Image (cartoon, rainbow, N blue to C red):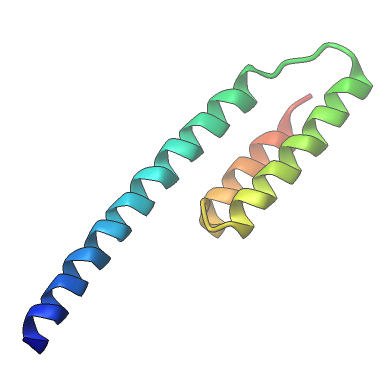
Length: 82
């Protein structure tokens, strides 16, 4: 009986991990696409957009959606924009 419960818990754990990995890639792709499409011409609007994008990237990092490496890559892309 205990073995059956442990097996069921293992199955549930695997399902949760798979679900989280799937959500991570979907959120990351959606955020990146949204950030790429946000182009503004006004310099102050552009700075404001960059700060907003950096804040969102930091939130994704803090929420565990992005790894530290993914965060650094995307942060550098945002900071490199003119």
